[in-house]
Image (tube, one colour):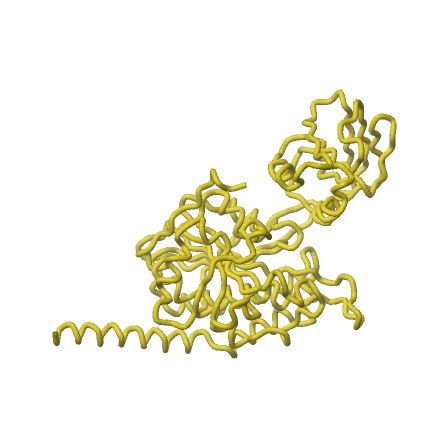
Length: 429
């Protein structure tokens, strides 16, 4: 009995010491400092391809460097730079059965200066009719790398216009893809003759690494996106700067804070990768590029952190996990939080398909237990994608507790004693 009591006291002492450490290493003051810097006006909304985006990347890189993490980018840099082409239609026309299509009803994905082809050329042809489920038909097409033309019925005009907002940037490619909004989704003949304005530009993720001790070839990723919308439509107060304090300076703040915490702990058996992604808001390009740099079979888990600055629908000390049912990672996190007052829940907004909408999706589609952790009330988040998404709307105390809970809940995955089950890729849409 005495021996059992001694063991219990020892375990309790270790737990208390760990709690004291985390409260010293993850503080509200430090979380607020990082969040305030990232969401400040002088970051100009951090839109991809802007000086504000580059300034935010430089700040994150400096934080990683000060903490003593290894660079995870190219040539000894924390910046993981990659090239993209920003394109738009300069001039030209599309004709379907002798009827000309207005330029605003055309999307052209190409890095060529001219796109010219017709119905006799070897292009793949697809149609999305008025009664078709748009996303079920469109989703398999967007991953294609072949030359193709897609005729989309005007009944889908609203979603076509949303897609058009993401159509400008693309990775280097020799293929041409044209999407046409039309009431004639099965024309007998068509001709495309477009001149494109093509500009090569650079973007950068910010990546840092803490090598694992006994399992260095097994990776655990902590990520969030640091870009936002920049300047956009003004609100009724004339404010046109979208600071993106919650979306996703909060997630990026968590990534930086966790990097410093785990570096101070210095006890990770698996290699930890901390990634701040760019270009999530314009198509998830940063995470797509990042994911290609890793063998998915060696990625044990991905903690993607997106909008944790407000209370969840259950109040404080709670968050949800997207795709909860797809692996047992959520159960592992909950087990590691036993004895705390924090609770993880399954995603309550499944109709919005959040599992596929954030930076976890690319690796999840390859089987990685990659989930997004969030508190955002997606059915009623008043400042989402608005100029009012500023630090004053965030609950910094609760946000700090969310970050602590992510650190505590991940510890058995980080130390190599738990390995989450993989995503069944046959079930992914």
